[in-house]
Amino acid sequence: MFEIGNSLREARQRRRIDFAQVELATKIRGKYIRALEEEQFEVLPSETYVKGFLRTYADFLGLDGQLYVDEYNARFVIGEERELRPRRSRAKPKRSRRFEAGVVVAALVAIAVLAVVVIAAWSSSGGGKTPTVGSKVQTVTTTVRPPLLTIVPLRGTTHLTVRKGSASGDIAFDGTLLRTDSPVAIRGTRLWVQITNPENVRVLIEGRARHIPGYAPRVITVTPLGWQPASH
Image: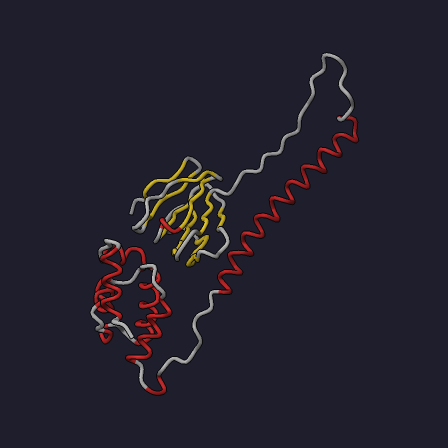
């Protein structure tokens, strides 16, 4: 058994994050964040909100959100209202992210095979004849452009949200990455990105590693030229 509120508060203060940053990253109102840290759960609209906010806030701080929900159930949920469902499985998000990465790899392989077929056809049609003296040798080159953004999990947990174009654009990815997850690759010309724990991942822009300062949530925009802080 542990103190839910004190544990959350100490984790936030240890990372030097204020309530405004938490509210921006998690979309949880500041008064509810304070209520969680003070264990004033009656302030929240319902028990469902308590559990959802506990899980989101703890995951954002790099903690085990399900552990906090279990502790809340053990201490504050009585009788038939106790949640008996098993711990949330992360298998489905993991398979989804792996499927996305597999699709990218398959597309690259298909492009490479197509290039080989084109070159073979060009050679069989006479383009592959030995050039005479003084003639120029034509070289067919196929360049596959890497994804605009690739996120490689390294350690701990990191919540990643990516939108197309801007903060109001379509969601390209939204989920929590674990150390064991496959890289997330996203194409586009401009992306709005929110990373809760930059120190836990490696960021590549068009295949080149770019340093994102860690130990604080970051909201950035990414283009082929690099990244910069996003304007709110």
